[in-house]
Image 1 (cartoon, rainbow, N blue to C red):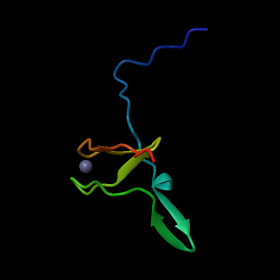
Image 2 (tube, protein in one colour):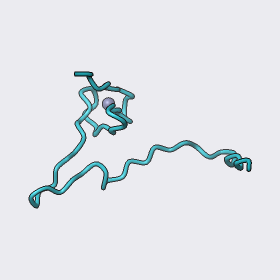
Image 3 (cartoon, rainbow, N blue to C red):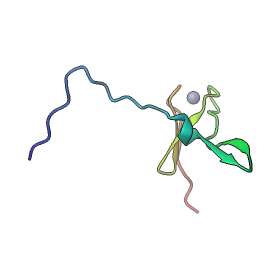
Image 4 (tube, helix red, strand yellow):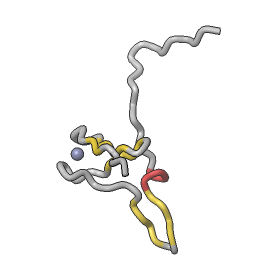
Length: 64
Ligand SMILES: [Zn+2]
């Protein structure tokens, strides 16, 4: 079965969900992700990498 192609004009949109960015621990709201060193926006975390949607800054996870 062939997948239907995406409708024209549909953009790949990276939607950051608040529930993924914050975690409630001991009744406190903790921000999971770091802030971007460049533009101070909250960075998205994907597979060990942190990516800033604001300026495109990416931090690769260090192998230790
Ligand atoms: Zn940034």
